[in-house]
Length: 354
Image (tube, rainbow, N blue to C red; front, side, top):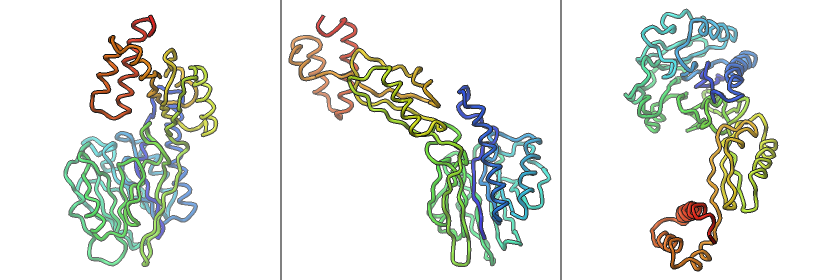
């Protein structure tokens, strides 16, 4: 049996709201999801597992009808899905009583349930969130039935507010596969258990490749692999400054690096190293150099601490340097305190030699 495991689609999400590319990201989330469904149908995948948070918030009836149409179109592939914490089944949820297509199996309660798909000889276990938070470890005591066929657990959680998961216990429970959702970073825990991660990155912390899990279950066991599928990635870009670099040079360098790594990606930029005491980098300008979602300036103004101490041992500057060196701390932290402290003194006095 061949299956696709995906999770955390977050249809309707607006990543990086207010940024020029934000509306396009909303469209890309939908496009990637529906493209993957279509490919699964064309390639004859037997089973599609969706481990929660299909929507970024409780869906409208129109959204459910559109989703149902897309899922029905890939029959005879069978689809099993659940509601997660983002699209939980509230009291007035449109999930309640929704008429799904024959090939779609939806867990509609916050109680462990099981559905049997006869054509695949497969038992699938799961539940849906009816609340935003579930602090009870609802998966701890679930075990497959003593019946022939394949046994799969569909689960959403993994932190203290969203169904805590004991990984070792769950791996030992006896399932042929455990399809996990909620954690956006993909992680293959074993051949029988994995987080698919978000299909598309949802915010700037979702760095790196995003996609889905492709797997096969036979009487020889389970084999899985992660498949990248997102339109673009959030990436961290570290730029190392030196004392000869001007603000304009840093902007030009950032533009060049974005062009090399890929204009389509979205970047968290980190500036490191040392800069001249008269140079101040401008994060707002750097953020306009491309798809830059954040800029963190960790550069330090450069000073020759030994020379400054020797020249100012009897005044406030020398006393400050001596005091900092007497304090127990790591070298990087010491350099930070000295650099920022001396820069404040430098500008306050109109220059070290004034």
